[in-house]
Image (cartoon, rainbow, N blue to C red):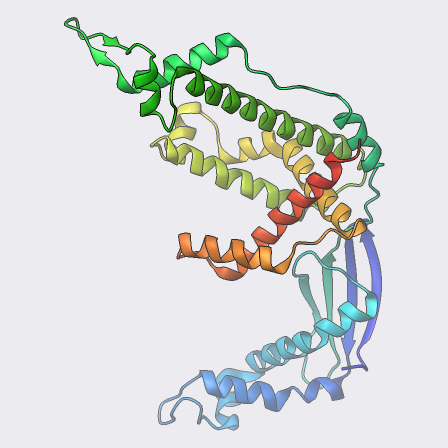
Length: 338
């Protein structure tokens, strides 16, 4: 449909309106296709579905239904051309507004697109280097090891005559119950290693968050509301899941706290904006640094996930896991900026 007339209007940094006009002659070519499609979907007394004469369709439903179907066909046909012609990178389906739709006249409509504004990232390498240059050596104190021993020994506690739990003595025999440890010394070494590993992991996650927060704070561009709303929906979904894990319904929890979902969404708005900026930054860094996930790694993760969660939709799983694996590679890239 190369003869469609279009004009572009910038509504905001993240919103574009395209006004379109399809000539009456070109628009009329959609009529037989629309008639056929409607005929396959409707049935009238005395006629089988798909065998209703065109004249009966027009007589029964009038021009309004036919014109509406013609409009839908014309817009579907024009959509990709409009995107290519105006170099639009839409982040959602457009809002459609029909301006003129009448038999024998040009068909006019507008498409309002939410688009990604130009995002300028701060010097993410310098930010990562600054954060990662702070050396935080993880260590496990003797007190932490002793406390961990006590907590673990409670698994084998017995009750005295007063009904009080009495933990067993930590000796070689008890140590062997926790794994292939020859004695208490080996058991304590493993505990110390586990504490150090946990602290190292927490420190890494903390630094990753510090890096991304600094990068997000350096993005001054106002994001399209649809991206922030998407983050809010994910936050609400996670919150609902967490509440249900505690054995409560979200509605009951809200009633107890005397809050509404809308109030929570308003409170979470700054965090949702930052989360959206963080994900945009991760995507842009991956593109700039040519960071990609190996297909065999992605295939393996998708296979593992879908085998574990049979009801999961493979397409959505693949997109989610590709994003998560790419994010991990970006974090690893930033961590070596020392």
